Image (cartoon, rainbow, N blue to C red):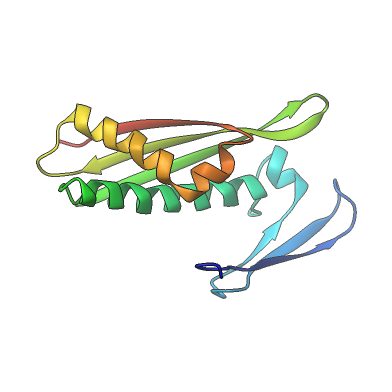
Length: 147
């Protein structure tokens, strides 16, 4: 039995280039978001894209994983600010998510920069979204301790 299952759905109208859709976060009911091809490869124009949603999922998952790793190491964080940038490139004639860059800025009492970086990398290895993405895209982590 799974620990959790979450649901999202999209209704898409039209072709790829001229079509558009509405993404619904079903489980939480938190949002309905417009989605389109131009939002993926041009200006977002108020629409979201799968890559933005991957970035959002990765940033929030990594923040939780890093908070957990820091707590287990005896250094509960005051704050972690995580940004994820998901890159879509053309590879062998088709679009492919090629990497996700994670940047984290943290306030963690009693921890030095070296320890922060080491635990940041450990957290990335245990992050469920990192482990999902890792098999198809490169993941990098940049960690900076505020101070």
